[in-house]
Length: 159
Image (cartoon, rainbow, N blue to C red; front, side, top):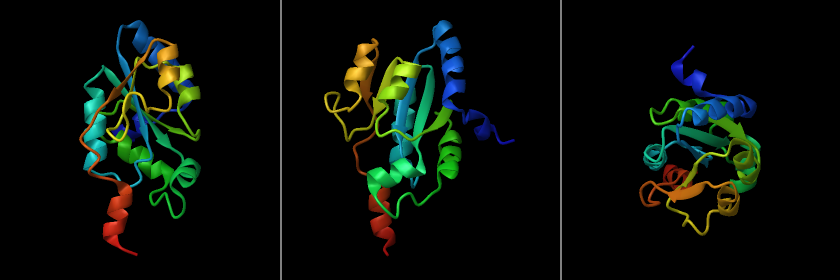
C-alpha cells in the first residue's frame, strides 16, 4: 500500500485519531477544497496551513459537492484520485471526503484548533467562522495570492 493511502480516513476514524492527538497537546489545523486540478496554489495553501499547527487535516469535496459548487463538467478528476493526490503531499497528515455545502457540521464534530482558508477569503468572510469561534477555535487565512485556479487552468487548456 502506498504511504498516501494510509492518510485517507473516514470521518469517524478521524474523530478518534484527532481526540488522541489533541489529548497529547498537538494542534490540529483543518483545510478544505475541491482540489480538482492540483496546482501550485493548492500546494502553497496547504503548506502554509500546516505551519499553523502540528497536524494538517484536509477535507476534500466529493464529486457531487464539486458539481454543486462549480457546475458541469466539474470535477474533471474523480474524488478518489483527488483524495490520493492531496494525501501524497508532504504537508498533509490526513485527508477525508465530505459532501456538505459547508464544513460547519464537520467542524463541530472534529473541533480543530484552527481552520485554514485560502487568500480568496478574509477572516470575516469565511462561511464557517462563527462555528469555529463557537468552540474556541480560530480562523487563519494563508497561502499565496489567488493567482492560480483550476478554472483558470481549464480555460488555458481550451475546449
